[in-house]
Image (cartoon, rainbow, N blue to C red; front, side, top):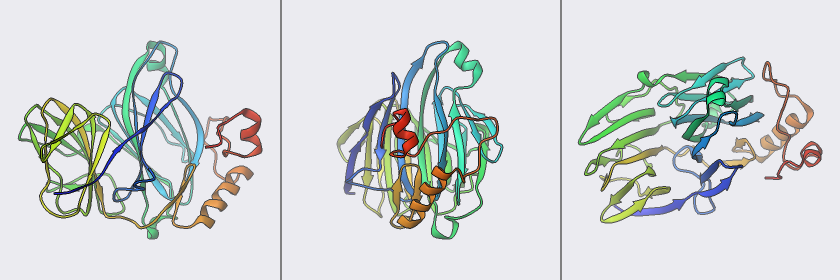
Length: 298
């Protein structure tokens, strides 16, 4: 077994709420179809405080929201309104274009809450890049759970351990939440070409090397790879087949720079669909609207 990359996230402070961006980085743009990987929190919100991500667009990807703690409300231009709880998964297929917002629901905002989770983007394969947008919410009790050897494995998306997630992934992949006791051994699915493990909490060991919280370890294709946990640990296994080179700019993913430029122009011109009940929006970075309100340029 050889380790190809060891990555740690670039941490941004969003006003008391930290986000560590692990993918993409200059050293590595993707693992399988995963082109974006953010570790949110953990963060404690006092009563009256919360997250407010205004409506913004996506193309060419599926957004994947998975929480360990807290609750987050999702609204999109399809008319979807749903709150996600820990252990459930929100899978939003942007395809040719969708707009959504993410906000702390009224109840948790009033009482305060602890937020902790992972948000990732999966690039869509070429034959689905312009698909009709869609949204699916899968409660925690609908996801396959496999427990043995001191570890619980929740299959969020894709295939692994002779199980298949109900999430409609559009290319070969795996995405697994690991809850392991001290001394557990967990194998990475051998049938997938590109593979990585991200340490959410605790630590892992691979061939005698210890990796701490906040580290993504990318391993070479082929062969048996098993991690051990020297202490109670939460980790994410992820990867699959690459969908090929992808350009990423702001919230847009595509194999074509021209398609991204068209999406940028459409957002500025107001040609994306609106989110029912929402009147705010995030302007395109660098656009006159963004400059006028002081929105960061990247």
